[in-house]
Figure (spheres, rainbow, N blue to C red):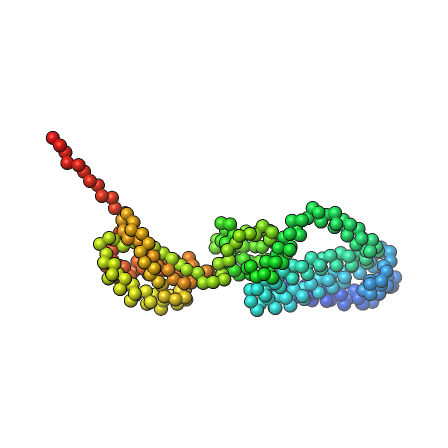
Length: 309
């Protein structure tokens, strides 16, 4: 639907440009058509403008359409380039954002020029105002510069899973000013680039899904470890779409109140870590049931003193 609207917009822009650059095709008076031709001659060749008339208003349309058309074509080309990988998509998305702001600025300057405004004076005034506002826009400048460093240093890219403060999510976009992160529940966190510090990028390397399971104190640990050495490699065959290798038994982590705690891990992609934790816990439970290995539940031993007469 979005692509269809873009194509429709391009077609309409081309038609409007063709019509208004050839005003003799339109039902206009000879004077208006002549004024449009004079304005197009002066402004599409970056020359001086005339007075404010209906012809000026009509001449704004092809100027806006040309600007929008150029922006849209560049945006589509960058989107095609960005399909190569996540890092390329991140860079092209940032460039697209910059081009969008430039297109708006150029369109405004062009339209003001067509309407007879002295754009040189306007630009000079904007420069002075910009210098004044620059002292109050330090955070905006910091956001932009930080965003550029984030992308070109490769700290993270679109599609990476990062942890920022207590928020864990997937990077959905990196803009000129902000980064958008989406968690597993679809909630979006929008953060200014300059506020992104001390983050964890969880997508750079494989992750470890871990679980701990207790067995009773009466369990023969040597027999159990022999069973695990034989059975854990078989779990890889059942979940090759999730597990990157066979689960590993790391040993005893604690002699707890009600049982002996054992730790298991398996290498997975960060996107599958929670699914892998659930699968690994289930696989261990099924294995222990099949091998009659007891998983204890909390127990309380009560001692009573003998009554003395």
